Length: 122
Image (tube, rainbow, N blue to C red; front, side, top):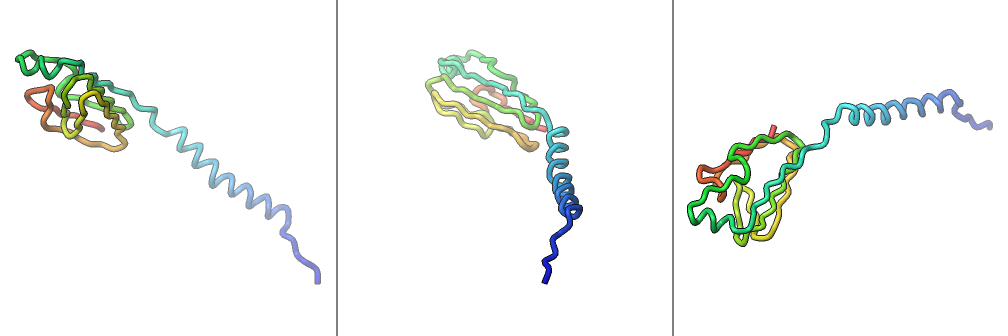
């Protein structure tokens, strides 16, 4: 009995379909993908808590901060005490990095602003 092999045309058709179904969506996703985010650095200098306790107003970053999707918020705390920015706590001598992949609003207590902080991502 003779075996039947798929024709070359059918094989090439399957290959072309596979290329279209895989390569085209990947290429389109890269072409329309959003650009890399911006890194927003908040650096809390040593002695900030002492200055605040003495009644000195510090201006490290604005109390209302607008970020875009994919932006990175990097908080570096060089102070000797922990600080809180909204729901983000940063220990003394530590740093925290947050990348925002979805729209969010972070608000609340801020150890650097007497009126609190509002961070909007969208």
